[in-house]
Each structure stands twice: as C-alpha cells, then as structure tokens.
Image (cartoon, rainbow, N blue to C red; front, top):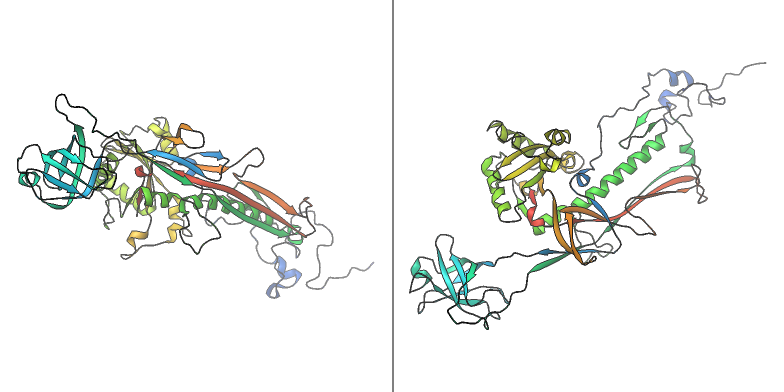
Length: 476
C-alpha cells in the first residue's frame, strides 16, 4: 500500500491526534502565505499560555464595597429626605436705618420668618441681634429692630446693602401675649426620584468557530480557564458587561435634551453629587496639586455644616492617593492608621488593610483611603489627563459617608434605614432582572433557532440611589 504525501495546505488532521498538537485546523493557525506548509507550521516555538499583560482588567466592585443591592418592582424609586431643622437665609439686602428699625428684603416668597422671632444678622464682618417686629409671609421682606442700638443695625456697625445673612435662634413675647399672630411651621422635606435603566449586550460565535479548538491556554477575570477561544471571549464579554453595569451607575445622566427621545437616562453618582453634594477642585478647592492638613480642614468645615458623618471613605486615583500619602508622611505617623477606630471594619485594622484601606483621623472624623481602579484604568477615567486649562474637569476621587441613613420610602409608606449608596434593580416573582443571561441559536446543545451560531445575551435593569448627597464630595 502506497502512502501519499499530502500537499502543502491540505488537511493534516484527518485522524485525531492522541496529544495536543498545533495543526492547521486549530483556531490559532500558521497557514498564512508566509508560513504555508506542514514544516513551517511546526517550526515556531509556540507558547501555549496566553500572557496576562494587563492583569485583572475588571474595574467592578466599587458599589459592592460601599453599598448594597435591593430589588424593586416599580418603574421608579421615590424617597424623601428631611429638610433643615433651623431657619436661615442668605444673600439678603439690609436697608438703611429708619425710625429705629430696618427692613431686610430678598427673602423667598412664603418664607418662614415670623413676628416674634429673634435673629442674628451678619454682613460677613459684623453681627447683631435683632427682633422681628413685623412680617408678611406673602412678601419677601421683614421689619426688624436691633436689640442693642436704638438707631438700627447700621448704627450697630453692619453695612447696608446686599450680602446679608440671618438665622433664627428663638422667639420672645411680652407678658399676657397670645400666639394668635404666630403662624405654624410645616416641616420641610424634599422628595427625589430615580428610574432604572436597561443595559444590554450580546456575544455570538458561529458553529464552525466553536468547533475549532485551539490549544492556547487562557484565563479570564471571571476565573474561567481552558483551551477554547470562544469561551474566553464570552468570559471577557460577560466581565465587560458587569463592569458597564457598575460604571453606568457612576456616570449616568438624566436626559434634559429635548432632542434625545429614545431613552430617559438615570441619575448616576457623579451627577447626584454635582447636583446635591459638594464639588471641589483639588481637596482644598484650588489648583494646587499638593494636599495638606489645611485642605482637609476645609473638608471638615463642609462636613460640620452637613450631616457630620464621622466615618468617611475616600476612593481616589493614584495622583490624589500619593498626595494624601505625602501629606501624612509630612506629619509623621500620628493619626495615620494608628489612632483610627476602623469602626466600619469591625474595629479591625487588619481587616481594613486587607481590603486595601488605610485610615487617618482629623478632628472628630475618620477617613479611610483606597485606590479606585476605575479612576486609574487607562481605557477609562485613568486615560483622561488634565492640563492647566482642564483641571476642573478631571475626577480625582470621591468622599462617601459610611453607614446608613433614615428616609421615608414612598412605596413602603414608612421610614426605613438604607445605606447612603445602594443599587435598586427590577425584580418580581415573574422575572429577576438583576443580572440575566440566556443562550439562543443552534450551537452548544441549545436549539432555539435555525441559525448556525450561538448567541449569549446579557441584560440588567437597575439604578443608583444616592441618599443624603449633601454628605458626599467629588474631588476634581
């Protein structure tokens, strides 16, 4: 029996090989013109294992670390947040003294200043105590009399004009007076809404490609490993979709453009902080790249004026992380890691360090710092570089309060405690849309269509709820 030598480019794998071999039918082939022929195909030294040149490429995990996920059945989530307990107004106008009284104007219509209120009036330099002798809540002005000067507030040292601020510190009434002229105050609250958005993606491969097994060992961020390229690609697609499911909640914007009618958008983390929280250029609000304790003292002033949440987490990019490290190194180890309560980590410093956090204390506040991979990834925000003209647009980090807040849930009809930051996803007994995936086609044992391919579909419907955003801070 004669044995025919196959010609170059013909099928050399008619009989299955007993061991792994790089044959011409493998997914990774060397049958191009430059390497045609059986001999050339086996000459190269071929590394079987894929080189993980970028390490773990996933950036998800941020929301899982600082928040929680909860189901919802409605098309939107509605919550209410308490208003300020005490009354204050700024950017008012103080009129000149007249008959021992002054008129303060510029109050909003329906203001809550009432006759009988005692107030502090300040122009930013001087201050004085005054009594509200007349008010008209339908107008935007009140008449006040200074407690310590018979001519008026200007005679006491305040400057007439705009830029005056006031706040109420109590009421005073004469003997035998009644409160018939005292209007009742309704508690102030604000209602907020957000709606989930639907994210989708798809991976597909033909039946022919799925049947070609290339002996190149691969691993993926999801922990999968093996020698089939299409499984590696599917794992990458799934990981990318999981990343987008988190990044979208960070970056999303509600649609206000009347020309964009295809979607409605959603309020993401950055949008919520810009709208209802604090945004700084650098920690101290300046373009100075270096950070120092004075910068953090500015943060403390902001926190004091808000909810005064004692434990806060800083998720920062590499540049800001190094700036903070340099700041702490400049003052020695006092308060850095040592002396921090680590309360959100069950008071375990080891647990905090294992999670990548380092802590320091300033005043009555504890700060826990961690790098945020999303801000460092070269293909995401880490690829946005700032110059002198763009320094206000580059996000360097975010301050997030730890713990929970109490809010009134409009759907449940009662007060509930929720993490300041949490994800709501659509789910019911009929369908759970937290993270769906399904396979269609005629490949891989799934026969749902006549197409010679496999399609893997991904879908989620979710939104982010940022409660008490006045306690959050965005570092630009």
